[in-house]
Amino acid sequence: MANQRDISFATFNLLNLNLPGRPIYTDRDGWSAAEYDAKLAWTAERLKALDADVIGFQECWSRQALLECFERAGLTQDYDVVARDVTPARIQVALAARKGLLVGDPAWIEEFPAAARFLDLEEATEARETVSVTISRFSRPLLRVVVQPRGTRPKPPPITVHVAHLKSKGPSRLRFPRERPPVLAEHASIAQSVVSHVRRIAEAGAMRAMLDVEMKGNTNPHVIIGDLNDGTLSISTELLTGNPGYRFIEKSTAGSRSDAGLYTVEKLQQLRSFRHVYYTHVFRQSMESLDHILVSDAFYDHSAGRKWSFNEMIVMNDHLVLDDKSSRTKVGANDHGIVRAQFDWNPMSEALEA
Image 1: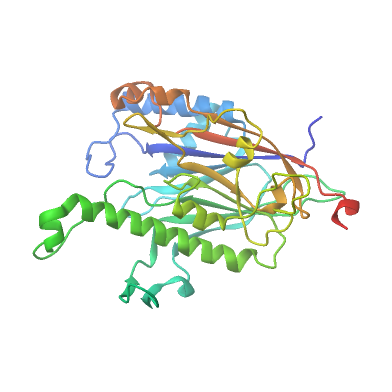
Image 2 (image 1 turned 120 degrees about the horizontal axis):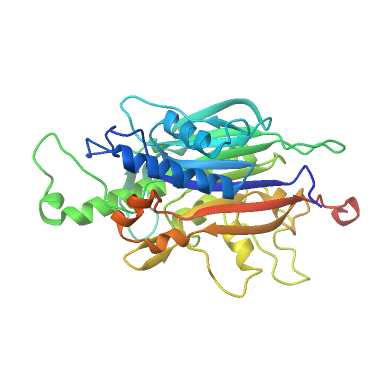
């Protein structure tokens, strides 16, 4: 029997959701009216099937377009939507939570923390160069909200949720007001790829620094929802999670305490599965897991501070077989899998905590 304290999270990349006729990057015309209608219909059906309590969105160009998706789904009375438009227009993250769950005001985080600026760092061994990365802002600002799960006696703790969309692995678009540097003249694609990877690592590091400050010594649960644009075992994702321990054998104490670590629901699911079916993106026949839900130890089964137990994770990815862009556009599909994770209210008993 379901408990009203149970809670589910989902991550949903909207693939450049914008009103018809509005520019998207270098495409000045954007979606046609027919393409937009198909996109609304497809997205609305996925929202109804998803049925999640908290949904983090990426690639939202228009707040109105996202609201129209919920209207088409018949869900406007069920969810509060947190989204914004910016000038000049560019993609943003957004969030929807069931009515009554949101508390306080949302916060949009654009700047790296002052203590997470990677400047004038001199290597002490082997290479002796001084390293400076002057990136100081997130390419897509983070969204931070607090949700209060339902229920009393006991009342669940509030959950801090961040929605993120880190820099993609695709080559960065580079521009210069003056003559091109030599590396671009001779190795343009290499330079573009290096910049995109450096930015993603810097963003992951800055976010990890924020979480260290917020989570250490604080028992309130945290959840990260987003398109992190890299796999679970990648350097950037592992940096962001903090690599907490997982318990694999009965006598192990791994994972019983993790002050600031984050557990990926992909790995929680794999620990219960006979096969690996988690992929959220297909590019050149390569299946990757780019979209993640990361949770603090309040959601980890073997943590002494557990409040919820992991129930299941599902990935809606059947549409990714439509790897031809025109085929996806025709039906209104996006190009990422949609991930949903369910957690059941199940606090660690005092006897076990002792």
